[in-house]
Image 1: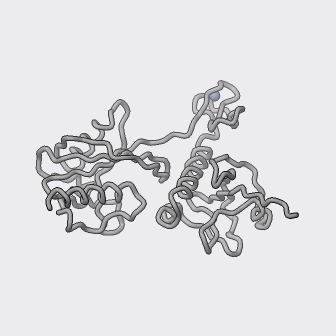
Image 2: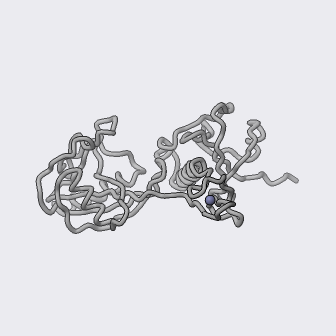
Image 3: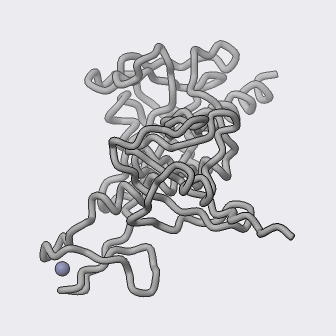
Length: 265
Ligand SMILES: [Zn+2]
């Protein structure tokens, strides 16, 4: 008789880099932890993978990868592993980032402790204030005009890549207002028929991307130069380089140009 293998998965991070098997990018099991000589001081329950628990741990900076493993940046895992695995890794990275930056109560400065009933919260033992992981909502929008889609090259892109306009939602705004404001600020045009497309957790470091489509309603393109290097309405079948598959930007662009192609056929 063999003992059942402990199939608990361990997401071992150093900042935004995750330890993965170099062959199949799999996450280590409990047995590997012992093998690697890694002792865990603080772990966070993230969820389940094939019905087995998944925990996240922040490793010390000096830990080097054991043989057959390497540290891989979360961003490059987006296109390399399936969405279930990426979702676990993304959640783990956000939880660790939150835990690191909420070690003390933001009201009274006392050191926080894990929630006594296991909720994902850090609680102040002195004033009882609970701190939960914070998510930053961010709108991203595809704007169409006739058979064209608006794509912009942001100053922060290090490649000649064009994507959709996006920006954080501000306090007091509706999502639609955030779309209208961002578009007006970044490229100077007005939009109409704003429709929800879908969403994606974006753990860089902790955004929730809320996707929309809209139509041009007026105005000429006037770029906010600190943020936007170039923006143009591109014909649906003449697109520049766009973001890689796996991102919600790519999904919205693909759905939008497919629809434009059908309409104009
Ligand atoms: Zn407190």
